Image 1 (tube, rainbow, N blue to C red):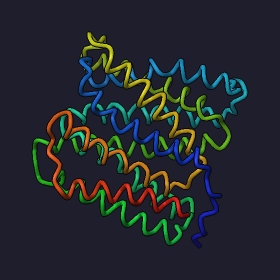
Image 2: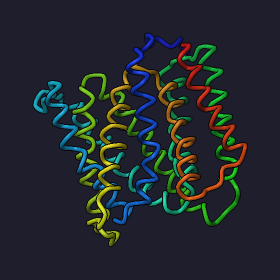
Image 3: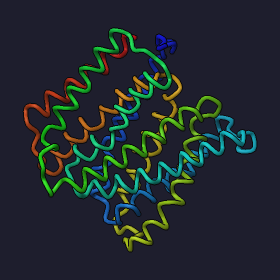
Length: 289
């Protein structure tokens, strides 16, 4: 039997962190394209540059590795492995499809988290949340409409991004469990460290350029998408139901599509723009829980 959502109304700070984190992450694909290291190597630098700062902040908030329970540490390690797989697939996919497509398919986690929240975590959405779900997914469908054209040019990138989204879903579900007993910055720092250990060998095997000749894209990626973006999102995880987290993820493809339009001339149709506004309207409605 499904139960009503038992999450208490989160604070304004938690909601700000959820939105700000997704906004910061949304511009990650733009920076990946600007980087001149290989796509997997760029992911490695994103993680390895941010991890020391994540662990430093965690230490200031009282995080101590010896105090982490073995079961929790195991979940963090598994989460880090899935996070590494997500970044490998997504960063390659970014170069083989439109920015909006890559972010939208990578955020199939949004739909999967809604399904997880209703049927696995047994959290039944209220009337405002249900309306938000309808608005968000109709809006996402409009954003995706052009991507669903049978185009060999976009197909491989879309498929890789979809695989990234599946891995990211597992990562988020595991991190939700980790955050029930662990400080957010420490949990993210450990998961990032594990993922970086996956990415460097993968980049070497792929024969990529490891050291960038221009450092500003990877530096900005590390501190915007990973440190700030993922840091805010990880902080917000225990404050919201999986349904709300899933809806917030849909903000990313809307903003990435806009970034692709501005930076690379990837044309947005009227339906794309209208779909993006529907997603944003859903995020306003979901606050009425």
